[in-house]
Image (cartoon, rainbow, N blue to C red; front, side, top):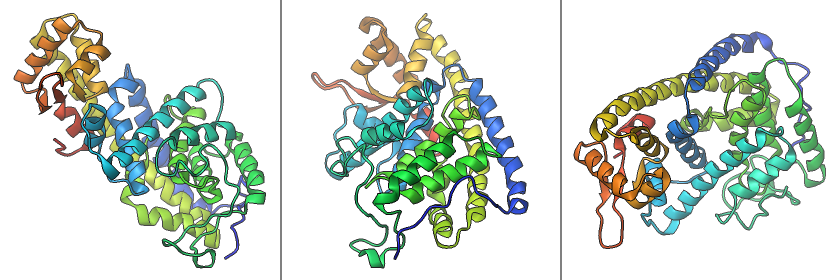
Length: 367
């Protein structure tokens, strides 16, 4: 099989008659979500469960098996060992990569330098760390069944000698303002996946670029729109539509799929954010009533930021004096707001969980 040669962007022709019916609903759904997002006082804290969920689901597409609660339990000090810990570390790196890239975007746009920086963070000290983190590949790679040869591959990305030319053209297109930013982000994501510039981690970097691009184009007020839930649920179609581009140039079919993904995910995210905001308001009244303290909002923000935690870590993160913070936690535990995952034993702190937040973010009973 010959290496794929990417088509130049912007595309000269698309079947706009097929796409036009998807563009309006996608833009409307995303605008409603962004409007809600802008009403959140501290989205980084209040919506951290959504960021954790995105990291888990995007990594799951690549084969990891950890869950949101397991990631939080690991960070709170529970030891899983073996492959589970490796899975969790990949998810933690994904979240860290998004955070670092978001900070960079406040100062400068998406560039190949930023993409390499993201990849270095994503692949730091995890499986694939031997595959030149932060460096574009110098060898031919391919996609197919395990141990398949190049001739047996289902897809062969561009040859390494042409790789930088394709990446520079991609970078220029990212800076370009195409006819519609949602059509453009569909093309940006797909082209990156098809160029496949790294030895490993291409899928995760490509999905991270979606909210970052929308933030750069000011479609979103903050880079907190996550698409991996839809892509993971429709994984076979996701890959089939990408394959349709490489095999028959079906960009229109890909864009139709991607716009539908944005529409459905924006609606789901909007409802999930509303549920989380409603929980925050309800818990603000409840915790104020229980604690009758000036620290009530600080306590609440600490719980939303990290809903599974060691009591000693809570004291440090909240900044509330230990002699005040620990009685707060006991009151919340007695009231059924917090649930123990590990009791205090000797020098080991208790591990507590704010289960209602986890369940709201996941849309199901997690703990």
